Length: 92
Image 1 (cartoon, rainbow, N blue to C red):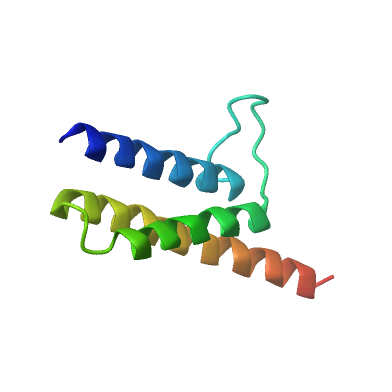
Image 2 (cartoon, rainbow, N blue to C red):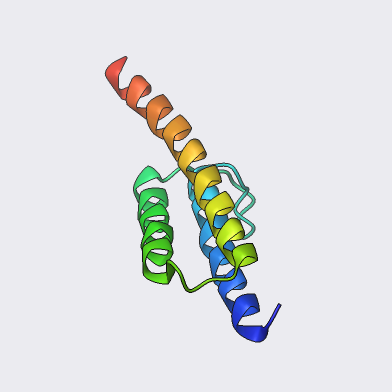
């Protein structure tokens, strides 16, 4: 993996990790708490989708697979949390 791929991989990981934290899937390392911020998670998800669109055709197969895997995992987790929070709001 060349340096550009390493940097791009780190960027993907940073955005993915932050989004998972906002979805309450990862503990906040600063305060040890698990919090959910669906709006922030959605913004991070949209950033990753934008990166996918902007880098289409310019990534190695490995980078493209990594990008798709991270995005798909976030979409599944986002839908799960979004449906849960929507149901909770509806039931109130």
